[in-house]
Length: 132
Image 1 (tube, helix red, strand yellow):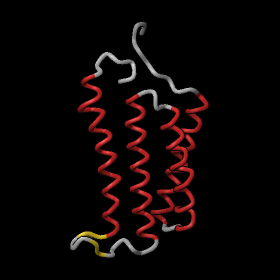
Image 2 (image 1 turned 45 degrees about the horizontal axis):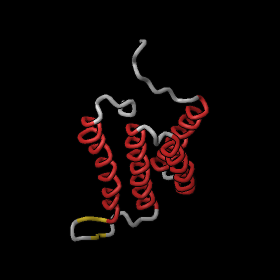
Image 3 (image 1 turned 90 degrees about the vertical axis):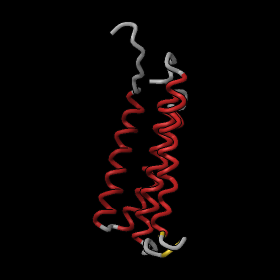
Image 4 (image 1 turned 60 degrees about the vertical axis):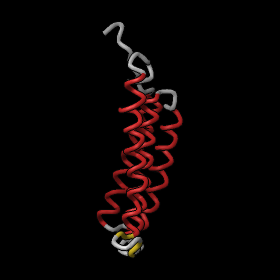
């Protein structure tokens, strides 16, 4: 496919992304199985690698927006997990809402990152190599 712009992930980055997936799965399995210490510990490598990946690919707007959304998703997911582990998930706040539902804030911020990219940035940069 000559003439087609493409972005390939360097192998050292790909290895980090693969570990990121492994750590994320261990975190979520720990949540499912109520393995509190392991679940909480796994937040850190999962989130740190997501931040590193985002920093390393920040020159591509598509990667930046998607990876910021991933960081926000992991953050929301981790807060939700901790709220259940530490039993403050059902504590009421703002009348009908609970502390667990505060995880909606980073979830919505992640959606806003994606909306910005797909609704604003990408349509106005159709010929940019950094659009993907």
